[in-house]
Amino acid sequence: MKKFAVLFMCALLFALPITLTGCQKDSSMTTIRLNEVTHSIFYAPLYVAINKGYFEDEGIKIELVNGGGADKVMTAIASKSADIGLMGPEATIYCHVEGQRDYPIIFGQLTQRDGSFLVARTEQKDFKWSDLKGKHMLAGRPGGVPAMTLQYVVETKGGLNLSELNFDTDVAFDAMVGAFEGDKSIDYCTMFEPTASDFVKAGKGYIVASVGEAGGDIPYTAFSASKSYLTENRELVKTFLACVIKGYEYIKNNDSMTVAAALEASFAGTSLELMASSVERYLSIDAWCHTPVMSESSFNRLQEIMENSGNLSGRADFALAVDNSIAKELVG
Image (cartoon, rainbow, N blue to C red; front, side, top):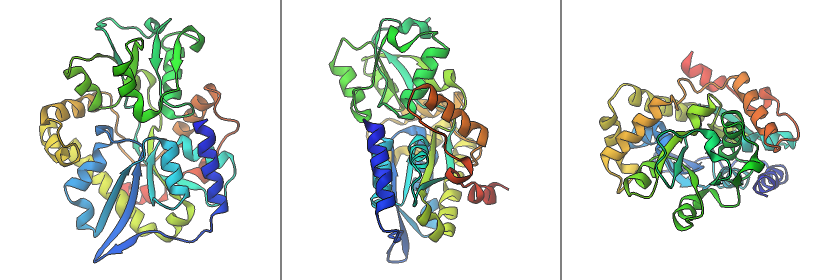
């Protein structure tokens, strides 16, 4: 049903007038309304760029909103209540398959692997993906990249059909952790950092596997905006992406505790040690893109994973869904 909600909001992109609400001026600053799929250290380059003042230095004010799912981020873009969305490319692909007019376009990739970790209720030092047979697992929303990637891993690494376990996609993305904690009949749940490490630290569960490590490289999270917004704000978007790249460079060139200090303002109440370990965990699986340029081969691999899950009725055209021109100008 969530996939159909995305398609409905894509239809709104066709129905709504194509008038640019775009960025708003606040004194000398230009505001970009950014809607993120969830709030996680998985998106650390963005938060570092915000907290280190890279956007401010360029006269940009970021208004950050947690959408709580790619479908909701796409809704915000469709309704013009957000300028840029940080989400899985699947929502953009759905819109392109439906042939919308003011369609969303991916202009920069942020992560190249699944950022979730499989958390078990009991310690399992020798966990194998085949151990999920007969178990109850919270997998994410149907039609979302987390659930589709997890299905791919369960089938390819575990050798299982989904009928051999309770692959539960009935719980909303932002309600999964609470549901797992409250319902002791659930054996596994996927979580992003720092939630996963915090959950373990509290003695509520154990991290037994990395979905991203098992799933390999896919274009997992990217920045998208409507075609009209990109057309009218090309230089602004270029500056935005340059700041994000600068945030990644900061992570690459500093130790984890220094990076944690740069993230502190974005994760109130989370210890520096926990943030540092989260950064190290993501670095260890090579989660962040080395370049914001999305490759056509990885885009097509994602569509293969979507087809495998039964959530894609046709293919999106890479040349229409992805605009690498801005990213290429920045990285050469």
